[in-house]
Length: 394
Image 1 (cartoon, rainbow, N blue to C red):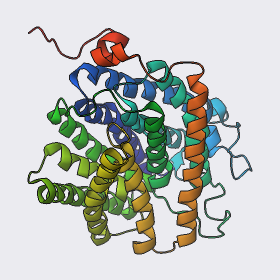
Image 2: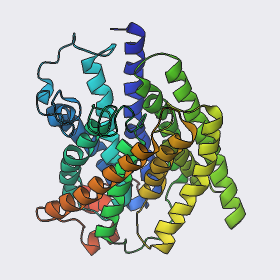
Image 3: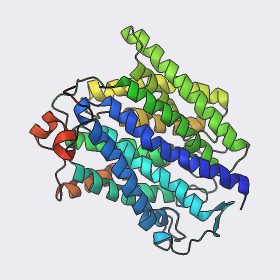
Image 4: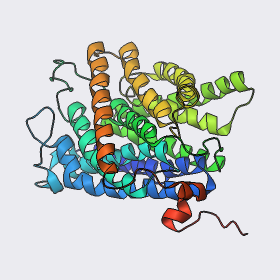
């Protein structure tokens, strides 16, 4: 065990959890209408709790178990069987590696929530997220990070898929799943209402930005120069994308919005995530600058041209950003296979789309996908959870 590595990953684990709670909850909560903000908080919070238990029970073993299959880690590590405080994973206690990876398993299905807020059934959220994490997310983790068939030594030979912190594993899977659910759900009855609290959106985005240092820097799994570089390029990409998004807004619409700039931040963060361990600051500047414009145009394409009500633009920002960043490793990285990157994106993309659709259809047979029209009109907060975020009488 290396004490410095261990100390850093303990901090990084806290930072990645901070991304979801409260960062993502506030970011998403501010973007919806006032009558639905608590339902968003409930979705994110409940997903975090449920994924933690499922990661302990089965998820970690499926992803990182010692199973010989290149597709599935097996069940030998279910409920952390055989794992003690003395077991090592590289230079880290394995229990810490478990905890760090658990925070990724928490945020990935939580990201999907942005596509279905304001109209989805709470029971569906819980059951779908549970199955999706075990059937889609955990196997993909094994394929790329757990020594599976897409990793080094797998079907591509010595050079497998390069995904430093989750452009494919987290952002592509969450983005495509969000798109599938948005199509199945259909549009909200009124999808043109602006965010009820842009200030809350900014606070949440700022928390995500800070937490992302643990997300990308921690993925080095060591306290060294590689972690420092990953942290630095993460920050540069986020800053560049924030500015390019705002500039593109100014050019197109004549004004720069706070919500737009902070959405650009998230686009830059998502885009640098897969590349953060393979590129330097100048490449990060280019990646972020392009991401701010690319993801903004993707929002316009999905929302206005395709007429898909991906409520909080999960696919356009996270999905497109993660895919773009994964491709940029080919351009700016070294020791990378273009065939592996493209094939990895395609294989994981098809798996995610097909399995998300099948899981959603199966869960719909057990619990309703969408709330009734009256509940949607009056708001999920009071009708589903019996609470209001704000005292409207004062």
